[in-house]
Length: 375
Image (cartoon, rainbow, N blue to C red):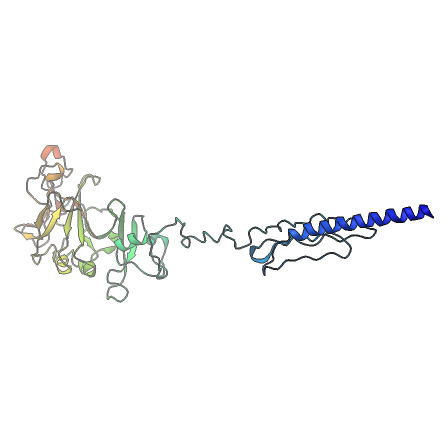
Protein backbone atom coordinates (compact mmCIF):
# COMPACT_ATOMS: atom_id res chain seq x y z
CA UNK A 1 0.00 0.00 0.00
CA UNK A 2 2.75 2.37 0.94
CA UNK A 3 4.65 1.36 -2.24
CA UNK A 4 1.64 2.23 -4.40
CA UNK A 5 1.33 5.63 -2.64
CA UNK A 6 4.98 6.37 -3.34
CA UNK A 7 4.56 5.39 -7.02
CA UNK A 8 1.46 7.61 -7.30
CA UNK A 9 3.35 10.55 -5.75
CA UNK A 10 6.24 10.09 -8.20
CA UNK A 11 3.84 10.10 -11.14
CA UNK A 12 2.08 13.23 -9.83
CA UNK A 13 5.44 14.98 -9.39
CA UNK A 14 6.50 14.03 -12.92
CA UNK A 15 3.22 15.30 -14.35
CA UNK A 16 3.56 18.62 -12.53
CA UNK A 17 7.15 18.96 -13.76
CA UNK A 18 6.08 18.25 -17.36
CA UNK A 19 3.28 20.83 -17.11
CA UNK A 20 5.75 23.46 -15.86
CA UNK A 21 8.14 22.73 -18.74
CA UNK A 22 5.27 22.97 -21.24
CA UNK A 23 4.17 26.32 -19.85
CA UNK A 24 7.73 27.60 -20.09
CA UNK A 25 8.01 26.40 -23.69
CA UNK A 26 4.67 27.95 -24.61
CA UNK A 27 5.86 31.24 -23.17
CA UNK A 28 8.99 31.14 -25.32
CA UNK A 29 6.95 30.35 -28.46
CA UNK A 30 4.46 33.19 -27.93
CA UNK A 31 7.16 35.63 -26.91
CA UNK A 32 8.69 35.40 -30.40
CA UNK A 33 5.43 35.52 -32.32
CA UNK A 34 5.79 37.99 -35.19
CA UNK A 35 3.01 40.28 -36.32
CA UNK A 36 0.93 39.41 -39.31
CA UNK A 37 -0.01 41.93 -41.98
CA UNK A 38 -2.86 43.29 -39.81
CA UNK A 39 -0.57 43.51 -36.74
CA UNK A 40 -2.29 40.76 -34.66
CA UNK A 41 -0.37 37.92 -33.05
CA UNK A 42 -0.97 34.48 -34.55
CA UNK A 43 -0.61 30.86 -33.48
CA UNK A 44 -2.59 28.63 -31.10
CA UNK A 45 -1.65 25.52 -29.14
CA UNK A 46 -1.91 22.28 -31.07
CA UNK A 47 -4.30 19.70 -29.56
CA UNK A 48 -1.74 16.94 -29.58
CA UNK A 49 1.17 19.04 -28.33
CA UNK A 50 3.05 19.04 -31.71
CA UNK A 51 4.95 22.02 -33.01
CA UNK A 52 2.71 24.96 -33.89
CA UNK A 53 2.38 26.03 -37.52
CA UNK A 54 4.11 29.33 -38.17
CA UNK A 55 6.97 31.06 -39.85
CA UNK A 56 5.32 31.46 -43.24
CA UNK A 57 6.07 34.69 -45.01
CA UNK A 58 3.52 37.40 -44.30
CA UNK A 59 1.88 38.90 -47.34
CA UNK A 60 3.55 42.07 -48.61
CA UNK A 61 6.87 41.25 -46.94
CA UNK A 62 5.90 41.36 -43.22
CA UNK A 63 7.74 39.09 -40.80
CA UNK A 64 6.32 35.57 -40.62
CA UNK A 65 4.40 34.45 -37.51
CA UNK A 66 6.26 32.56 -34.85
CA UNK A 67 5.36 28.96 -33.97
CA UNK A 68 3.32 28.36 -30.82
CA UNK A 69 4.75 26.08 -28.22
CA UNK A 70 2.83 22.88 -27.58
CA UNK A 71 0.89 22.12 -24.40
CA UNK A 72 1.74 19.20 -22.19
CA UNK A 73 1.36 15.93 -24.04
CA UNK A 74 -0.42 12.87 -22.81
CA UNK A 75 1.39 11.30 -19.91
CA UNK A 76 2.84 14.63 -18.79
CA UNK A 77 5.88 14.73 -21.10
CA UNK A 78 7.04 17.96 -22.63
CA UNK A 79 5.46 18.82 -25.99
CA UNK A 80 7.67 18.10 -28.95
CA UNK A 81 9.19 21.34 -30.25
CA UNK A 82 7.88 23.22 -27.28
CA UNK A 83 10.97 25.39 -26.96
CA UNK A 84 10.32 27.35 -30.18
CA UNK A 85 7.80 26.90 -32.97
CA UNK A 86 9.21 26.13 -36.41
CA UNK A 87 10.52 29.35 -37.93
CA UNK A 88 9.23 31.22 -34.91
CA UNK A 89 11.94 33.90 -34.86
CA UNK A 90 11.34 35.02 -38.43
CA UNK A 91 9.23 33.44 -41.15
CA UNK A 92 10.94 32.35 -44.35
CA UNK A 93 11.63 35.48 -46.40
CA UNK A 94 9.85 37.47 -43.74
CA UNK A 95 12.39 40.28 -43.55
CA UNK A 96 11.67 41.45 -47.12
CA UNK A 97 8.55 40.72 -49.11
CA UNK A 98 8.00 40.63 -52.87
CA UNK A 99 7.89 44.38 -53.35
CA UNK A 100 10.41 45.41 -50.73
CA UNK A 101 12.98 48.18 -51.23
CA UNK A 102 15.77 45.94 -52.52
CA UNK A 103 13.58 43.74 -54.68
CA UNK A 104 14.54 43.74 -58.36
CA UNK A 105 13.21 45.17 -60.61
CA UNK A 106 11.48 47.89 -58.61
CA UNK A 107 14.54 50.20 -58.51
CA UNK A 108 15.78 49.86 -62.09
CA UNK A 109 13.06 48.98 -64.52
CA UNK A 110 13.18 48.63 -68.29
CA UNK A 111 15.79 50.86 -70.06
CA UNK A 112 14.77 54.49 -70.08
CA UNK A 113 12.43 54.15 -67.09
CA UNK A 114 14.70 54.32 -64.05
CA UNK A 115 16.86 57.20 -62.90
CA UNK A 116 19.95 54.99 -62.95
CA UNK A 117 19.44 53.91 -66.56
CA UNK A 118 22.43 54.70 -68.80
CA UNK A 119 20.81 53.85 -72.12
CA UNK A 120 20.82 56.11 -75.20
CA UNK A 121 19.40 59.56 -74.66
CA UNK A 122 19.65 61.07 -78.15
CA UNK A 123 15.96 60.68 -78.93
CA UNK A 124 13.49 63.00 -77.18
CA UNK A 125 11.70 61.56 -74.17
CA UNK A 126 8.27 61.99 -75.74
CA UNK A 127 8.54 59.79 -78.82
CA UNK A 128 6.05 60.76 -81.51
CA UNK A 129 6.02 57.24 -82.92
CA UNK A 130 8.00 55.18 -85.48
CA UNK A 131 10.74 57.02 -87.34
CA UNK A 132 12.48 56.45 -90.66
CA UNK A 133 15.96 56.73 -89.16
CA UNK A 134 17.75 53.89 -90.96
CA UNK A 135 19.71 54.09 -94.25
CA UNK A 136 17.65 53.30 -97.34
CA UNK A 137 19.76 50.16 -97.74
CA UNK A 138 17.85 48.76 -94.75
CA UNK A 139 14.64 48.81 -96.80
CA UNK A 140 11.58 51.04 -96.89
CA UNK A 141 9.99 52.14 -93.65
CA UNK A 142 6.81 53.69 -92.33
CA UNK A 143 6.89 56.50 -89.82
CA UNK A 144 8.14 60.05 -89.46
CA UNK A 145 10.61 61.05 -92.18
CA UNK A 146 13.31 63.52 -91.05
CA UNK A 147 13.42 66.91 -92.73
CA UNK A 148 17.21 66.85 -93.00
CA UNK A 149 20.33 64.91 -92.12
CA UNK A 150 20.76 67.29 -89.18
CA UNK A 151 17.43 66.18 -87.75
CA UNK A 152 18.53 62.57 -88.20
CA UNK A 153 21.67 63.38 -86.25
CA UNK A 154 19.60 64.75 -83.35
CA UNK A 155 17.62 61.49 -83.41
CA UNK A 156 20.84 59.61 -82.77
CA UNK A 157 21.89 58.48 -86.28
CA UNK A 158 25.69 58.21 -86.53
CA UNK A 159 26.23 56.16 -89.70
CA UNK A 160 27.06 57.87 -93.01
CA UNK A 161 24.92 56.77 -95.93
CA UNK A 162 21.84 57.43 -98.03
CA UNK A 163 18.71 58.31 -96.03
CA UNK A 164 15.24 59.44 -96.96
CA UNK A 165 14.49 63.07 -96.04
CA UNK A 166 11.54 65.44 -96.53
CA UNK A 167 12.72 69.09 -96.29
CA UNK A 168 9.26 70.67 -96.55
CA UNK A 169 7.63 68.17 -94.20
CA UNK A 170 4.65 65.83 -94.59
CA UNK A 171 2.29 68.62 -95.68
CA UNK A 172 4.69 70.15 -98.23
CA UNK A 173 4.34 69.96 -101.98
CA UNK A 174 7.63 68.12 -102.59
CA UNK A 175 7.88 64.36 -102.18
CA UNK A 176 10.51 62.85 -99.86
CA UNK A 177 13.74 61.75 -101.53
CA UNK A 178 16.95 59.89 -100.75
CA UNK A 179 20.27 61.66 -100.39
CA UNK A 180 23.65 61.05 -98.83
CA UNK A 181 24.09 62.10 -95.19
CA UNK A 182 27.40 62.63 -93.44
CA UNK A 183 27.03 62.18 -89.67
CA UNK A 184 29.96 64.28 -88.49
CA UNK A 185 30.60 63.62 -84.80
CA UNK A 186 33.44 66.17 -84.71
CA UNK A 187 31.13 68.95 -85.90
CA UNK A 188 28.13 67.47 -84.05
CA UNK A 189 26.32 67.92 -87.34
CA UNK A 190 24.41 65.92 -89.91
CA UNK A 191 25.37 67.28 -93.35
CA UNK A 192 22.89 66.92 -96.23
CA UNK A 193 24.33 66.45 -99.73
CA UNK A 194 22.54 68.95 -102.00
CA UNK A 195 24.57 68.90 -105.22
CA UNK A 196 27.62 67.53 -107.01
CA UNK A 197 29.88 68.59 -109.91
CA UNK A 198 31.59 65.51 -111.34
CA UNK A 199 35.25 65.24 -112.19
CA UNK A 200 36.01 65.65 -115.90
CA UNK A 201 38.74 65.27 -118.48
CA UNK A 202 36.89 66.28 -121.67
CA UNK A 203 35.44 69.55 -122.94
CA UNK A 204 31.83 70.63 -123.18
CA UNK A 205 30.12 68.47 -120.57
CA UNK A 206 26.51 69.67 -120.33
CA UNK A 207 26.59 72.13 -117.41
CA UNK A 208 23.41 74.20 -117.40
CA UNK A 209 23.15 77.65 -115.85
CA UNK A 210 20.29 76.50 -113.63
CA UNK A 211 21.88 73.16 -112.72
CA UNK A 212 21.88 73.95 -108.97
CA UNK A 213 18.35 75.35 -108.82
CA UNK A 214 16.59 72.51 -110.62
CA UNK A 215 16.55 68.76 -110.12
CA UNK A 216 19.08 66.81 -112.20
CA UNK A 217 20.27 63.20 -111.81
CA UNK A 218 19.27 63.00 -108.11
CA UNK A 219 20.13 59.28 -107.92
CA UNK A 220 23.79 60.28 -108.19
CA UNK A 221 23.49 62.04 -104.83
CA UNK A 222 23.06 58.87 -102.76
CA UNK A 223 26.87 58.46 -102.69
CA UNK A 224 29.91 60.72 -102.55
CA UNK A 225 31.37 59.14 -105.68
CA UNK A 226 32.19 61.06 -108.84
CA UNK A 227 31.72 59.70 -112.36
CA UNK A 228 33.97 61.33 -114.93
CA UNK A 229 32.36 63.57 -117.53
CA UNK A 230 28.80 63.41 -116.21
CA UNK A 231 26.62 66.54 -115.97
CA UNK A 232 26.24 68.03 -112.50
CA UNK A 233 23.69 66.42 -110.17
CA UNK A 234 21.32 68.32 -107.87
CA UNK A 235 18.12 67.76 -105.92
CA UNK A 236 17.10 71.35 -106.68
CA UNK A 237 17.89 74.24 -104.33
CA UNK A 238 14.19 75.12 -104.13
CA UNK A 239 13.58 71.89 -102.19
CA UNK A 240 15.95 73.00 -99.43
CA UNK A 241 14.69 76.58 -99.12
CA UNK A 242 12.18 75.62 -96.35
CA UNK A 243 15.10 74.47 -94.19
CA UNK A 244 17.05 77.72 -94.31
CA UNK A 245 17.33 79.71 -91.08
CA UNK A 246 19.62 82.49 -89.90
CA UNK A 247 22.14 79.86 -88.77
CA UNK A 248 22.18 77.74 -91.94
CA UNK A 249 25.58 76.90 -93.37
CA UNK A 250 26.68 75.34 -96.65
CA UNK A 251 29.91 73.39 -96.99
CA UNK A 252 31.83 73.33 -100.27
CA UNK A 253 34.43 70.62 -100.89
CA UNK A 254 36.65 70.59 -103.97
CA UNK A 255 38.35 67.29 -104.90
CA UNK A 256 41.43 67.03 -107.09
CA UNK A 257 40.75 65.66 -110.57
CA UNK A 258 43.56 63.10 -110.45
CA UNK A 259 43.33 62.20 -106.75
CA UNK A 260 39.98 62.54 -104.99
CA UNK A 261 41.61 61.91 -101.61
CA UNK A 262 43.00 65.44 -101.94
CA UNK A 263 40.43 68.08 -101.02
CA UNK A 264 39.88 71.54 -99.59
CA UNK A 265 36.83 72.83 -97.70
CA UNK A 266 35.04 76.16 -97.27
CA UNK A 267 31.97 77.11 -95.24
CA UNK A 268 29.49 79.66 -96.54
CA UNK A 269 26.67 81.34 -94.61
CA UNK A 270 23.30 80.98 -96.33
CA UNK A 271 21.75 84.45 -96.40
CA UNK A 272 18.21 83.22 -97.12
CA UNK A 273 16.21 80.62 -99.00
CA UNK A 274 15.96 82.99 -101.93
CA UNK A 275 19.72 83.54 -101.94
CA UNK A 276 20.32 79.78 -101.92
CA UNK A 277 18.18 79.41 -105.03
CA UNK A 278 20.12 82.15 -106.83
CA UNK A 279 23.57 80.57 -106.53
CA UNK A 280 25.39 80.04 -109.86
CA UNK A 281 23.15 82.62 -111.53
CA UNK A 282 23.29 86.39 -112.07
CA UNK A 283 20.54 86.72 -109.48
CA UNK A 284 22.96 86.06 -106.62
CA UNK A 285 23.62 89.62 -105.50
CA UNK A 286 23.77 89.10 -101.73
CA UNK A 287 27.33 88.37 -100.62
CA UNK A 288 27.57 86.10 -97.58
CA UNK A 289 30.49 85.16 -95.34
CA UNK A 290 32.90 82.49 -96.55
CA UNK A 291 35.60 80.96 -94.28
CA UNK A 292 37.81 77.89 -94.08
CA UNK A 293 36.42 76.79 -90.69
CA UNK A 294 32.95 76.08 -89.37
CA UNK A 295 33.38 78.63 -86.57
CA UNK A 296 33.75 81.33 -89.26
CA UNK A 297 37.01 82.73 -87.89
CA UNK A 298 39.69 81.76 -90.45
CA UNK A 299 40.49 83.21 -93.88
CA UNK A 300 37.11 84.88 -94.11
CA UNK A 301 35.66 87.12 -96.78
CA UNK A 302 32.24 87.89 -98.23
CA UNK A 303 31.23 86.68 -101.65
CA UNK A 304 28.58 85.61 -104.11
CA UNK A 305 28.39 82.64 -106.50
CA UNK A 306 27.66 84.34 -109.80
CA UNK A 307 28.90 84.76 -113.39
CA UNK A 308 31.66 87.31 -113.90
CA UNK A 309 33.40 87.71 -117.24
CA UNK A 310 34.11 84.33 -118.84
CA UNK A 311 33.23 82.12 -115.85
CA UNK A 312 30.96 81.60 -112.84
CA UNK A 313 33.00 82.48 -109.74
CA UNK A 314 32.66 80.97 -106.26
CA UNK A 315 33.97 84.10 -104.58
CA UNK A 316 36.05 83.67 -101.43
CA UNK A 317 36.93 80.05 -102.15
CA UNK A 318 40.68 80.20 -102.78
CA UNK A 319 43.16 77.32 -102.40
CA UNK A 320 46.05 79.52 -101.24
CA UNK A 321 45.29 79.13 -97.46
CA UNK A 322 45.61 75.34 -97.90
CA UNK A 323 49.24 75.60 -99.06
CA UNK A 324 48.72 75.73 -102.82
CA UNK A 325 49.85 78.48 -105.16
CA UNK A 326 46.66 80.03 -106.49
CA UNK A 327 47.07 83.72 -105.66
CA UNK A 328 43.70 85.37 -105.11
CA UNK A 329 41.99 83.39 -107.85
CA UNK A 330 38.78 81.77 -106.57
CA UNK A 331 37.64 78.40 -107.87
CA UNK A 332 35.16 78.68 -110.74
CA UNK A 333 33.18 76.89 -113.46
CA UNK A 334 32.43 77.59 -117.11
CA UNK A 335 28.75 76.87 -117.54
CA UNK A 336 27.10 76.43 -120.94
CA UNK A 337 26.20 80.10 -121.36
CA UNK A 338 29.45 81.55 -120.04
CA UNK A 339 31.63 83.35 -122.57
CA UNK A 340 34.09 80.46 -122.81
CA UNK A 341 32.16 77.33 -121.87
CA UNK A 342 34.48 74.67 -123.26
CA UNK A 343 36.31 73.46 -120.11
CA UNK A 344 34.37 71.13 -117.80
CA UNK A 345 34.24 70.62 -114.05
CA UNK A 346 35.76 73.07 -111.57
CA UNK A 347 38.93 75.12 -112.04
CA UNK A 348 41.39 75.10 -109.10
CA UNK A 349 43.41 78.16 -110.29
CA UNK A 350 46.62 76.29 -109.40
CA UNK A 351 47.83 75.64 -112.97
CA UNK A 352 50.80 73.28 -112.70
CA UNK A 353 52.37 75.26 -109.86
CA UNK A 354 54.73 73.55 -107.42
CA UNK A 355 55.12 70.54 -109.70
CA UNK A 356 51.36 70.14 -109.88
CA UNK A 357 51.04 69.93 -106.11
CA UNK A 358 47.23 70.14 -106.46
CA UNK A 359 46.74 67.10 -108.64
CA UNK A 360 44.80 68.14 -111.73
CA UNK A 361 46.04 68.05 -115.31
CA UNK A 362 43.08 68.45 -117.65
CA UNK A 363 43.42 71.96 -119.12
CA UNK A 364 46.27 72.39 -116.55
CA UNK A 365 43.82 73.09 -113.69
CA UNK A 366 40.32 71.98 -114.69
CA UNK A 367 38.10 68.94 -114.22
CA UNK A 368 37.98 68.99 -110.40
CA UNK A 369 34.95 67.67 -108.52
CA UNK A 370 32.74 69.58 -106.08
CA UNK A 371 30.33 68.51 -103.33
CA UNK A 372 27.88 71.01 -101.79
CA UNK A 373 26.34 70.21 -98.39
CA UNK A 374 23.77 71.95 -96.21
CA UNK A 375 23.36 72.13 -92.45
